[in-house]
Image (cartoon, rainbow over all chains, first blue to last red; front, side, top):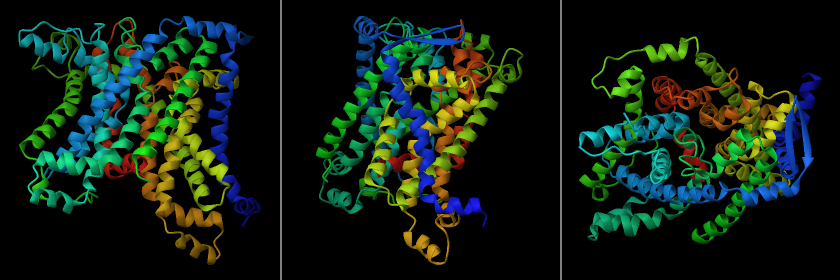
Length: 295
Length: 283
């Protein structure tokens, strides 16, 4: 054994964790610290050099006068609440329905994996084509039925709902996968006993299956709620936040502040606020999950 | 296929026609958009605008996207493949070592809890929040607009998932096997390389597939840290969709090409993908 190999061996315990820790320090903790420094600064690039000026008040003042932030917050909340609610309801119904199939279950599951794996940007393209005012499938169908075409992505009233539909399409399969695994793990004798005792199918679902599925439902719900806040790709492609601020979301706004308005200082302040909100939500969710789930 | 879900519900618990109707509707809803965009990708721009059906299929959109003089899409595919492959190999190495280390060696609680807690928080936070500092850091390092910056950031965003998955898979390997190897004179490094890694192969495949797919799909980082030469497939698709006038036909063809890895993996790696996706949630 060479000397290097011997050394690697002796110190294996220490260096095995080191790469992961270094990566996290360099690419998450250091940037996080830098966010704090950026949030009190104005950063400008001129002729290849960057200049930092200390302007804490200007950034806070901008936060107070940011007209887009309020609609972005409201839209994000509506987006998260409505899409997660729909995803949970549809995912649960589908999981129970597929588990009740005699055969062909794993073919259904195969198909359901597809939306989770394809690039979200491609999902945005698909729906951009389908929602198109002039030649999209929905308006073609409406015209064929004699109705007037609808401006799915271009009208202020409809755009957010249209975007939510895309998110529901994207993520129902994920809720389905988690809940389907849970349904398949349910004790069969309990369900059979309920049926023998004369319960209807609907009663079995409502009184036996759903209570037993509660832990899995809570997990899927928490996952989806937190990940719904991360939405960006599809909405960027479909509407980029428009028309006006109708589909403006916090992440889209953050992107625009950082890279279209080149306001790295103010963007950092917004980022810190977002991170604080997520951490607060995590803490509350942990308490709530502990309360719902028997230890 | 040897699958893990053979035991069906007893006939008494099966859904009737209503259950079957729900499933049929869901399948149509899921596959419909794929059918729609695939069809569009074989139509000329004019046929798309006219809503023609039936239509004469053409490969011109694919030719235009892949070989057209004004298109960088072939280079974009190269960038995506390179970044996804390198970042997947790297994250598997770093993540598996970390998972093994946390499980096998007695780290003080603040190290392991701190590490795992931070991966959880980082996984939940939108990546957009770190793009500002990343942009500045990579500019200062001269790595802005390089594929190296994409590899580094993709390894970072995939690390939490890899560590959790590998921890769950490594937990299933009985410690006796490793101990026996140690008694026989294996060093800790040898035991890891020769005993643990081969047994963890299913986990490595599951985590590897997901890391590859997530890197291939990743959009906001690539959008902010690359330009024309280093752009990846999703960024290129967004360009087709976002230029002064949407190029619907090219956008459709490029999108269909971008789904190829997902479709292949869905058929070949389904068992691993389902395990990978549900393990994190169930355990």
